[in-house]
Length: 166
Image (cartoon, rainbow, N blue to C red):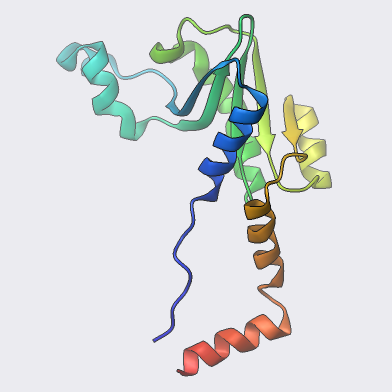
């Protein structure tokens, strides 16, 4: 029977480390649900319980930071850059309707953490107002990046084939 490595949740750790280093004086929240809840849910449960009940159906940003006059939304993607790039403008649009962040500043900065400066991502990000951060790449992210790059090498393919035969 072949084993694969257990799934690693590296992006939350990466975002947490990034926020600690670059937003030490800001109010930071991790995995923040965004957008409104249905009026029926709020009517049935009240606002606070309704937010908890409806949380599984609301999109979630990796991190949000509140400064005196601005809000930063941070999304990290090790591989699926298009996901992060396309989600950030939607998340920004949901911010005014998010009860938990209603008192946060309306001036929003969108940041996408990626492990390397990918040309098409930089171009697209500039067009949609997203700031790309590729300068903060801890060793555990570099390692995940390298593992993926090696996946289709001759040696990696042979190792997988050997595991299948066992």
